[in-house]
Length: 169
Length: 327
Image (cartoon, rainbow over all chains, first blue to last red; front, side, top):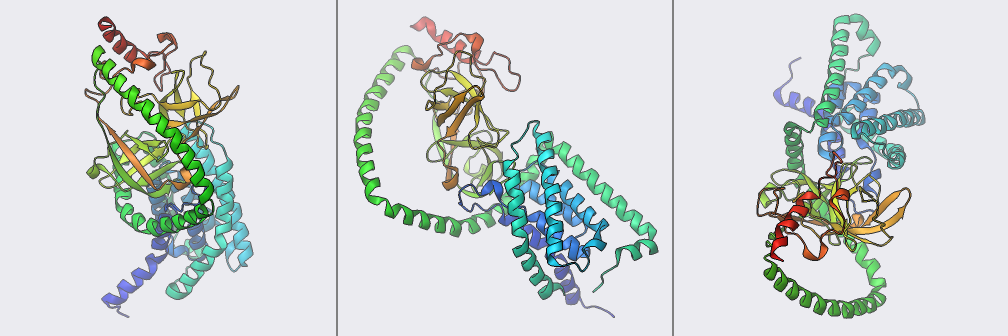
């Protein structure tokens, strides 16, 4: 079956949707919301997105895409370069290795899985940042960021599910 | 749509799986390489960062405006309630400031006359560039913001950025139309400061908490809670005397400073263009402040970061000595 040019464009557009959506979300975390003390604990949306797509549609979030998302996040937000990249890659690989566990599980199991992975990712993020800064960093913002990230998972998962149903099928 | 079962594919095409694993290892290696490159602070990384921020800034600029409007609206609503009390307080403050104005005028005239008498090198001119805060970046580990003014507007790396109430940070990266301001609470921020009254010098070192630490103070400096901290101007990039904050806690565990800048309502930042008459760090270029000449000996003067050796004070010391014969 031959696909026309426009069909191919359509297919590509559908396939890059998750990655573009993730980049957009990362950009939105940068906006100054002018909510007191919100900036240090803004949820780690890149992690949520990479997790969701790696669990549900790994073909649309390959390791290279996770790398790209991490790179964009690190460059745009001014955090230590490479740290976000490495963690997103590891999360992606972990899910790829444990995919059997996630297939056709209930939402709450997937959410719990996310909480566990986010905990590991937050600890790793904190450690790597401390090592790169060469100083002990107070863990409090990291703890709060972990909590906001876990809390932000359900609404975003709902959003992604809508996108998945509407665009990707 | 294709939805390959991972295990089946792996069995069928071991070469492909091997290639995938290799690609993954390559990416992980690249991540580590990025960490090293980023730690080394190369020009390349900075270019990449500024290219990204330049590209994102227009988008953020548009998105942040309605949010700022809503925040302003809410704030105005809150202030409306406290209008009467605020008005009375402002009246009182105005009276007090009127008095200060006359004092300042008199001192300014006196200062000008004395400076002329002593032939003090003129203070370099200062100009400002104002930028909107379009991004509050970083998450839990970095305290920095992006403003929508960059090299095109005359912003340069190292310049001081002021919020309305005091110093907010310094310019860390400059793109064409965006700049990243490293806030003084960031763990990488080091700002030479001086206690306004006692003129003891130190370094304000951020540690990602709301109250940065005042370090490298001389032994005999006994900062009291409430002491004003201003920039010292050492290093020659920051103008001296910019308000920074007040000592919040002074005790055995170190001195903590509460910055004047209000992080939660930081909508615009002014970047100070402070042109030194000579090259950076040359002796004599810095105009010594006659009333504030250091009371302490050069031995306990400000150590230059990061070496920590006690030679940083020689710069002004020398400048002061150069003036001495004319007295």
